[in-house]
Image 1 (cartoon, one colour):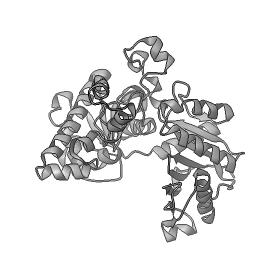
Image 2 (cartoon, one colour):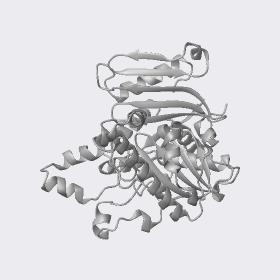
Image 3 (cartoon, helix red, strand yellow):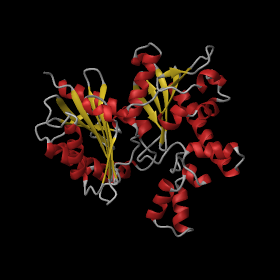
Length: 404
């Protein structure tokens, strides 16, 4: 029997998302989430999608889960109850989402002690994410020390940006000393969507130039030239770029100095302001785009301002990336807002006919879980809506590496 299953783990600071996939046909066998790890009110939601357990649907278990080790043991027990346990000979590998790979990791990487040490060393670049990613890896290695463990990095897809794009225009020695450059994030999503868009157009990936708009609570754009990322909106951290749910996106760096000198705010307070209290939330008090749109439609001035700011920034990036690419074959919308909000797509592309962009309003209004084109027949540039699948991308990269 050829092992073809991959367990994908996404370990957050107090959560673990997981999916078990069979790469023989890219099907999902089980999905789940452990949340509020370390609290008395921890919750494990497990859904088997195949086998005898699937008939019962989701299973929810509540109660204290002390740490990530306990969380992964609980996940293992749930999978075993469905005949999908970590001890199965059909399990080929575990694929781990790791947020930051720095300049060291530009491809999926088999994890050993040296690699794990390198990921730990990158914690200063992703202090909120990499520590949890490391914990997930450590626990999974303890549970199955014989099984290949693979790290798939959010930053890897963007590592192909030319040096003049990745560099900030600051003193080069200082930048090198502190690893300051543009890394980009959401890489697995951008890679998946760019490839899926090419398939949707019936073309080879290397023949297609795509602007990918990953619009969720966190949001980022990328310019993908023939399957290779040449520019992306997020930078050293996920703070740069588009207006997001709670993040400011682009702003004058001197805002930080002004808040410190004039506002008397500490670095930590400014960090919290820009990452957690800005974006849509800062502008109108809501970070859920559905609520912002509802309020804007009812005439709420602050919601209208937030929506206008969000759309203006999107248009700027679409225009800029059209210039960067020279020829654009498609603009692809993905993630929660990009996939589900026909209004955001319509507003973002309004007035961009000179760039070859026009929607089929009827096609754009239809909601579907399938990748689809929503551009007008006469449009020079295709507009695609492509549901992202980061877990499948991680599993695919993991499986390709271990089967080599």
